[in-house]
Image (cartoon, rainbow, N blue to C red; front, side, top):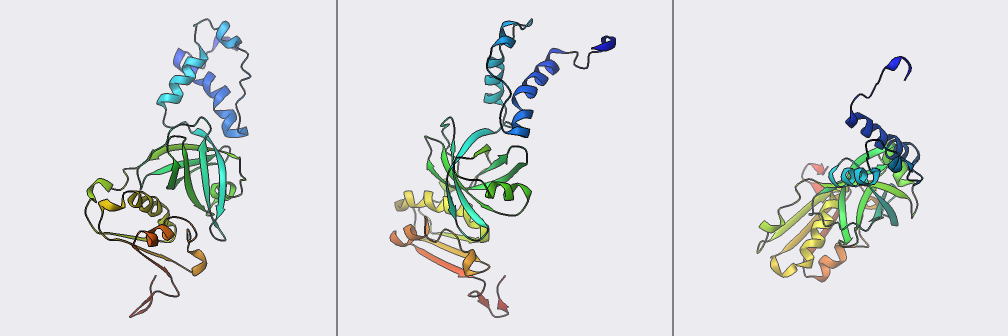
Length: 245
């Protein structure tokens, strides 16, 4: 650099810039990397740094780097809510606890936290999230099509204490979008139905049109398993003082 000034005097800062310049900033801005795989950086590196080893270490140990995933299916739940079936491109196993969440990102726009609404194939890394259009990023993701690429980080959070529910009656209560994580919990409970007592789901929404998952799990399965499922909308939900909120 002119004048002999070095803005990255140490090896760590130079390596960080090298990785970010080729493999991070382009994904954020354009949705793809700028590396063409020629191998010249490996052959001519004076420090004998193999960029492939550096990337492997970063990818394995950095929870802030999203993994790439494809949208495999889309279910329109209501006028502004849709459920995405997402699969990791590298088939990374994914077996989160009910109640945990992921950070879903769209490169160039940002990311947001969203509940895990179900896991269809833990071994292949296929799971579901349900999204409501609420802001800039969710508007963009809600407009994506099947086979679009998104970024996923997680799972995060502690999850529900399922191990403490053995032999007990269970009442699941949810309102609006809160049903997403409860749906995944209900799926897990139904798989081991004999371990629990009565299983009751109470679910409410602002209007009948806002009730979601009615044609999918867990509602039909709850009824088949001799459990109880009750749906409310605000117009049905009355209290001594008037409508419940």
